[in-house]
Image (cartoon, rainbow, N blue to C red; front, side):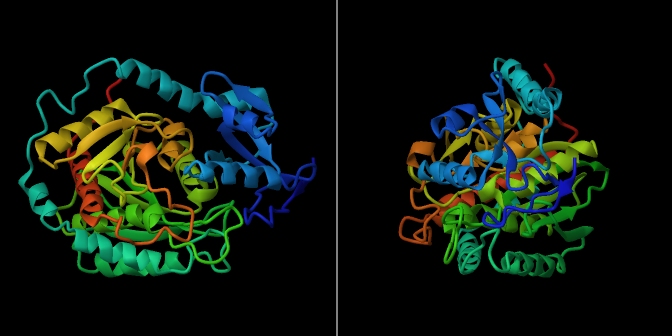
Length: 409
């Protein structure tokens, strides 16, 4: 069949190798129940995962995103690099996710520990915590939310990306570690992701991933100001602070990668491509932490939610042990946020272990996200947000300096 390079111009999404028969449709995975509610026709469905394959018309994509945003969720779907042309290909697409779900179901029935003994206190990590502050977190959130918009389809969607890259390069200049910083191009958006890497000293081909999305939105056809202070300048700031502090510590045994993902708000576009390429390259990712919204303490300061869907029981247990061992003072609630609520779903779908701590339970989260009112305000709590930097530091340091990996059933 003849191929076309036409794109969803109105949506600002690049259509890689779209067929001539359907040049303006976006191949994606989404929750079957949501598609049915919105009367968006699915092409193939999977009862086990509750997901369907759909080729979204522009009006369907807009309706889906707007509906999800009305529920204070992100896109709620994942854009695919190319159409799924057969049932066999659909089954293959969902196999890593369904396998991970099966493993999770088994492991959730067991008491999982980071090791045979509780996590031991690492003095160097205690010292790292001393560098974490609400003031530092506020400085980065103020900076990121000062951009008019970080929307993926802005006239220049990479103004803030290049600026953050320059900030990271300045931080790296003060480090003695082997650090690389690069921009990652994508096929379905002109916005770029940022990756910073600290090379491991003993097992450089084993990776610990920290990530948060850098884009912001006030709607699918987002125009004008989209400050995105909580969603997700806050999580992006946590990752910047983690990079700043870890770059001044000893070289880790495993390689640490920091990601600031592009175009999360329109279908996890950046992280989906990155995780898919990692799987194709058989990249050995030990665990991926996602920080998306950390600024609004809806259940009270230092009470956070650990998302149980599309995350790994093993890493959720590590979160509990980190909190206990280092006396972080967090109250951890169990919650769920649905498919595609943030970029951890991209890694999980490819079979990688993931963790998603969140600012509050989903019913108590910030209701101003995806509006021009998502700004720093009296409701913002930077000490609460800084807690997530400590979690990121402990998660990374424990995984990057041991040989531990996800237990198998």
